[in-house]
Image 1: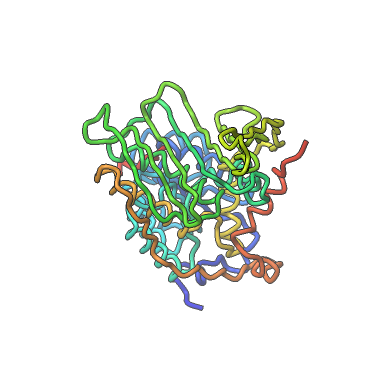
Image 2 (image 1 turned 60 degrees about the vertical axis):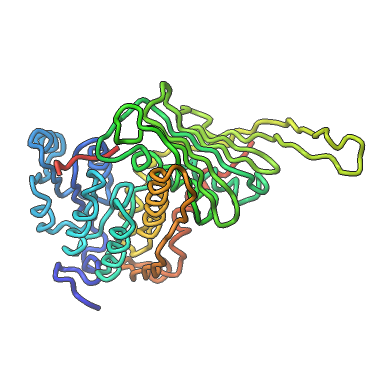
Amino acid sequence: MRSNGHGRRNGHRPPGQADAPVRVGVIGCGYWGPQLIRNFYELPAARLTGVAETRPERLEHVRHRYRGTQVFSDHRALLATDVDAIVIATPIQTHYALARDAILAGKHVLVEKPLTANVAEATELISMAQAAGVTLMTGHTFLYNPAVQALRNLVDTGELGRVYYVDAARLSLGLFQSQVNVLWDLAPHDISILSYVLDETPVAVSARGSACVQPTVHDVAYLEVLYQGGISAHVHVSWLDPAKVRRITVVGDRKMAVYNDVALVEKIRVYDKGVKPPATDTFGEFQMSYRNGEITIPFIPWQEPLKLECEHFLDCVRTGRRPLTDGRQGLEVVAVLEAADRSLKDGGSRVPVEIPQMPAAPVRTAVTADSEALSMVEPDHLLVDALVTLVEPGPQAIEAAP
């Protein structure tokens, strides 16, 4: 195997350090960075080694709150340490350059959503990570949410029947941004959730929107995403709404499910409702048959999705497993966003989603005692199976982007 010159071979920690905490560095201490810093500091499997940030007052806060954590005003100084993994929580436009530097330094990388600002950058990062033998993971946190796992399970098991369509809304008042529009800010959540829940590949998208507050930045947008199997999903995102809404409705021919992430409890409701068209040979052919059955609320134990995401990243670094939200999954979301942006500028025309075909990253040989058993497990299902068990329905300035 090829040495990367940083004391690891193909991205692995030396065998003697297999059980030691993963040394993690975080770049960015703005909006989202502090949440990542908190989680990696608290997780036993990690050791928060350092934080890089350009604003001195934020570094001072980290220094006092997280004792023993080094602080750096330049990310290159952090990369020069013996840190194993880098977490990037900075504005979208900086993701590519920072991730590239980290990969070239032989570090495993977790990049907050979206992975990059365009498809070309995402494709290059994936190729670089594969060549370096390091983990590249995208921070699509909602895919680690037990409620989203439960929603996927409802679709997978056929509980809802054949899916007719999906409707999603992600609305709030702000946070307004000037560097990206509302599509790139909010839609990555729903695009990643829908592809995952439906287990379908997006093939085309159309988008319309408005720039109400800032003349050159869309703050309201409506997307229609068409999937390979023929299902269409509608996504409404807005920075200009009086109420905070985080809702996804999946309508099937047997049942319907509503996922409301804002709800403190009962985040998913399953409605035994439907409609049956009459037989064409009856006199009542214009009278539809409606069904109004029970409402079922699956039991979903609460776990912090970000904590689960961080734990999964550490596990992938230690074992060589492919992440649930790997670079290819991040690439798919960026491809949809790029196509939606083109449609938005073209007045809502349908634009094909062009996802470059990337070879699957090889599963690195784990350095743990049970590495042989781990390497035989399909990576995409490792986390999924664990979470579904929990939710089975029953009676540069460097600052973090939102």
